[in-house]
Image (cartoon, rainbow, N blue to C red):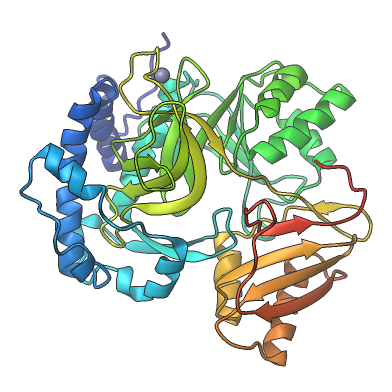
Length: 465
Ligand SMILES: [Zn+2]
């Protein structure tokens, strides 16, 4: 096993290292995670319940939305009784988060949890919600990030390249952005090699050229980007020499993406299940392709249509309760994702297992000249769009190249000025020449399959990606 390159900024200290404050916080959490990953279900629940009782007490005292809703929960109950009572709590969905507005924000956040920041997320549902998070939440987030590196044996001296959602105009081809370190991804705990990033809207041929030129050790990207890029590289015979692993985030990973990356580049894919609003939910097991729930930072429940917990082999809705975000507690929050619960993992870790995470993937927006654009809206995009109209849900529908319809669900009629402003914003985001139609209605219907998609491609005869 390689020696870990701990950061040791203190003058006159080489070993054992003393990292900076961030690194020490990450190390303190990781020291505990190294043990808790092996715990039994009951032992894990005992400690989760300790944290949940604090969260519930805080929420019902300082979060208006929860004053009444959590009033009856008995915090003095033993672990088993508390678990039963917990499972009777109402589920929080995105509509409720939208409707609650500031009512979900704590009026009395402990100062020690640090500054807050807002993120916007639409998940896979096209319904933007705003979530407020704390610096403390980020501390736990970094610890899990480092756990993922340790689980998957990454060499911190290596080069990390990311093709992921980035703000409009950020990290443009050909150079992208370069940083001397992996940044937050090393948790402030390790000295690392450099990192590079490229805007996710970059066309695939240019992504491939960038990848070959950088020749990184690790590629971090969305499954749909990895799939296109691997297929392109396979067709063109392009194989970056140093690449060791592809890390995928933010979308459902289909098995064929693993096969394609193996075929094109000879490397494994390591997937993680996280969302912008809830953070890390599950990481891929170090020893096989199932996922371990990150139960130390998020309580994850998978429940059937009647709200009962699913057992191994059963598929149900994913509910999450981030354990440490006291700024805006989300309690039994439904992500709109469906997952399959797995049996205990042969690796011996006690962290709960998910065998599959099911959902949908993004299509690409096609411009008049045939080039493709990633239709994902970033946090910043959603913030901009919600500042133009009070939208509850949106959906892009494309019927021919170079044109797109944006359907909005609004609580009231849209004005001509708002329509024009939204259309301008869409053109600014994707292409000045794009033909944009904006319509508003009270609600948007899901597809016949029952699933709602925020981007629908109806161009006839277009090969399915
Ligand atoms: Zn495992």
